[in-house]
Length: 488
Image (cartoon, rainbow, N blue to C red):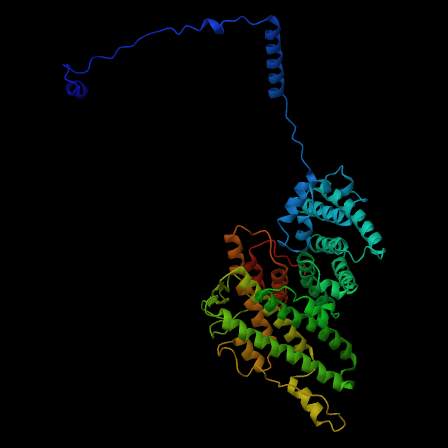
């Protein structure tokens, strides 16, 4: 109406609604009659489409690819096995491909057997498990053949295969001590490598060697045999192309490597302990030096991270009200168990767990010596007139200037209370677990737990007495993650 008025037209307002019916006439050009042959073709196409829609469509897939993808979710990202898988092609794991059979590369068969057995065990599929064990036997045979060839046994592929089969023994053991046999064999293979070649190898190969160090150290500590990683040339090789965080971590690995040597030396001296005074002094001196080194490492760590990385909730393990009854259950004792540390990242939590694990093993060594205190050993040595004095004895209390007055662990160490310090270090590992898992869960990455964390949790659980104590049950309850295994 307004539009009419603006145009100067008379308008009585809107009228009623009217519907118009019309027929659309097709163009004559489109009314061409179809030939009989065309109609026949259309009927055949309709029949074919109908038969396709009614029949079951079978999707083809590579089951080996499924097993590999599942296993990779539980492997360390950019770890030794994952590095090998990054170069794997689909043709390498296709069942009909020659590269996935015994005639193909040894790593292909090793990783397929690992992935198949692991998938079958996790999903309780007996047929898949049987298939995987058959592949495992063939992989072992192929690996032994490669190890007998001097041109093959130093190749990265062979080392990767040994690591893969060792991980299989770790996750799904096929026999007692098989994991240890693989790891000790791996260490012998590394000893055959030329260090000059390792020092100038590619970054990927260097990462492969660095990724094996924890597995080797775990095995050496358990077997109480000196590790190759305690040698100065290997310590230097492991530091090539390391970040600042990697160097801090390597510092702790060096102490662990030294600890394997000290443990083996202690076992050798134990049957005739009193007959080897000089060896006793050297052993205790080296053990105390390792302890002093850890004290300095912790001071530097606290200076870098204390302000921004962690804060503690009360009660703390050193509080007077913090007591545990070993005979009680976790539920009944939850009011006096330690609370978790809140840490900046899972990397910080992992580093603290590695530090406390290293500290536990050094303290266990000192506690195992047949003397009440280090002072008594050195007093015997100094008071013996027949002793040659060319040994220099270190300061027995290098930790007198504690990093913090409330550091309960080092207060126990200063008093020579090795076992009490061990337990407090184990509890510190337990306090790091929730923060580690929370950070991983926040990244939607709960499947994998670092080997360092696995080893630390197992060490803490064992140190605290396992499930026979409230602290041990608390460690088990704190895990909240089935991937933290008790296999190391």
